[in-house]
Image (tube, rainbow, N blue to C red; front, side):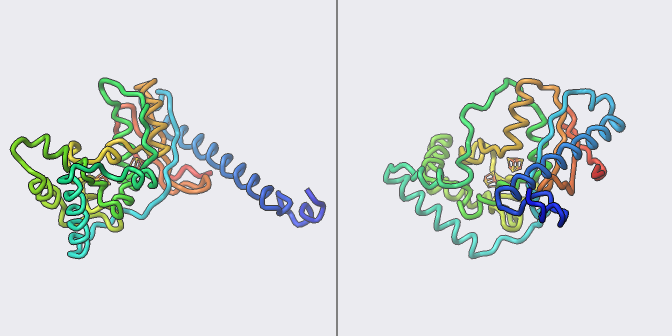
Length: 253
Ligand code: SF4
Ligand code: SF4
């Protein structure tokens, strides 16, 4: 590092690469320290649960969910989208998967470990997160496409695409999380799992993938989930192996 930078008390030479490296190192040190203190706190408060192996994950912060009334213009846009999808379904055309792949939601994992009894920790993590990933469902109209409408019709013998449209519009909650999918209601997704798109049912962010993979191998794993940026957490919870979620005090040093 140049002498001048050292004299100015800088920990890097000022070049973008050096600054980046320094910041990444700082983030990783802060995370490690935060996780260490959070583990200690969990062990003091819930010794039986915290005796389990523990995985630590980080979630990106998002605004606390605020419910807002669905606007007529939003309903109209969704209906327009459904009509276009229905037209494709009636013509027997498949949806443009390329469009789906262009979204963040295309990070679908096809090879996630599947266990006969799903572990409760991944669901508890998503419940704690409150569905940050569902924000992309607003512009994507909940990923409802022609194939999904066709599947709905197949599951309801004697019905047609028009019934599928009614079912999807009818399932819209009056209020949804602001800035998020119109189906993202007060209790999470208002659509039954069978009616959700494959993207919705299978998307897993990095943190969820980590918890799914860890608990598939070690079902008794506890989870420390911290929400924050650059290793600075503003919310941390402890998820016990049975899925109970307990808030930790800010364990920052
Ligand atoms: S997949 Fe990730 S972002 Fe989506 S709800 Fe679960 S934890 Fe949150
Ligand atoms: S349909 Fe449900 S799971 Fe899919 S984006 Fe909307 S709220 Fe999320």
